[in-house]
Length: 386
Image (cartoon, rainbow, N blue to C red; front, side):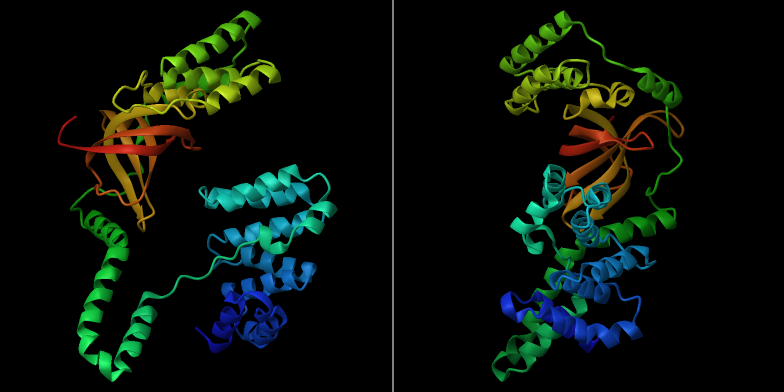
């Protein structure tokens, strides 16, 4: 990292009066002319300009980042543009920026809180008078290069004569830590390598869902219109199911009423019942919908537990934070399946592409290519079993 950029980043990391935004801009002024495509430098300048209230110039710098070919998932930039847009009275544009950011980072609670705050703003002038930029903004710091971390650690150890005898132990410890941190990436690399050499299963792209055109037609025509008597009956059934710990059946009725012609008053009471939903006993799930049922009417099964059996494909370990894979459910014939579940599990899951597994998860939505999105709860390896 260039000295000017490194010094600017160190200044930006400081807090209070020592964080001199004007100084950061001055340091990077010449640097950005020589490196116009440096995303980090542009972000540092853009965020510094916000803090010295040069909002129009900040908007131009941050907008330029999104237009750059080297731009990655700049959720902090999208969030900052939303703040600037709202300050300029562009409410719809601001909300769209936040929604784009949430699409890139669905688990970012800060972004969700900011979206809620933007939607609830009645008077932008009061909002900006009562809050500071730091209350809304965040900055994604660059990940430290692993080799730089190792080199700095070794230099520190070897500079002290008293610690030279411990250098070998330090190297071993660092190596173990590096391998532990990067193990998911190593697994991804090995899987991809084996797939390219024809030694294993990996990416699966040419799989179709059985009768998907018919299912899509039924989904489009589905509409819930209930009589007052039906609404009262279903509302009472929700209470009965909750009392009897029939969580899935209660949740399906809740989704049905929330997406029906029931009055807002009834829907508000339904949401209250949703908040007191009992925990699910995974060994005694009261109703298990099929993948065809969920694909046909996805909104009816939102937050409903499913247990599906299938084959792991398109496996990806996102560091140790998340494991994502497609569950190919019930092969009907070659390259045709009953359904596909895009399964998201927290943490590192020790599974492999091509493995047979049983997945329990919550239905969280559906993708544009008709994959059911599952928030994984439990996974069981089946080996060669069905």
